[in-house]
Length: 370
Image (cartoon, rainbow, N blue to C red; front, top):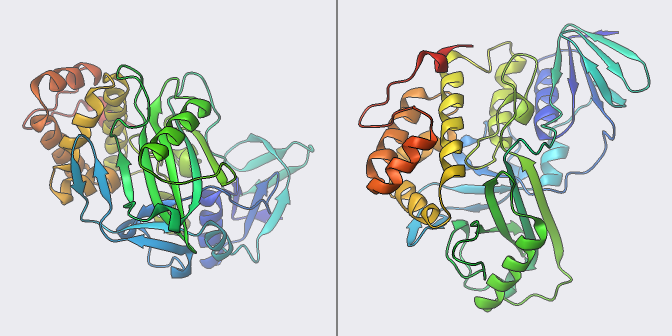
């Protein structure tokens, strides 16, 4: 059998792409060492990022106006949704696909060699296996507890909370609290290292989360379900042969890639380009933003995000979600840069290695290549 497309990797990105290819009548083969493995991670997105075709039952909870804290509170005027991982996986039906339980070890444009030695041939091969960890790559790490919502009375849904009540020393690398409802009477509270090279270890984050919960009077026993997170926020390779995090869909400032992958899956299945020139330019600009975040002293991070969340909602949305919106991303970065305190502005400018962000951004020709 020669499939129209072979998708390697059955995380949310690979499964979504395979599902949408099947919906368009393509012959599909999928390769994964454990194709029936259940997804344990919590996935979330901004509601306006999700494609219309997504089964609405895949949404477990919606927060109409989540809160963010830098040194002060910011109400985000944008609905935020937490996905039901089990229902999301089930809704991305693979009926009709050839499912191969094996590990892909060698990929070309039209062939896959499996660990068993078996070759597969397709008109197109797409790598959706994610990004391998490496000490050279910045990572996001987190440690979370799933609590009974009754123990979280009065706790608002928090997109990020940088307040310093987690017991960390003032000069230590920063982490923030992420708190969202999961539906079914439970809530996830997670201490998160946004990005680090190296990132904070789970042991450190566990101690910080426990300290933060105790300082806020939130009860826990230690027997709660634990969620651990560790993945690279850079290292993807945009192109026709990669998809999802492996294809550069992960936002380096948030780590989010699921909503972008869901949205792009239908377009890619229909033969459209996932990476027009505008998307490649945005990718380069976001990478510059990550360099700036990694270079900031710990004390500057809450101030940086105060400035970000004080921007108009349209500018926030463009930077967080506008994967192909070059004009909006440029405007958002320009607005943010101009509003930063002078000392912080100098640090950001130095960290972005010559990409000047003033009242207007001049984009070097290298950004538009590729």
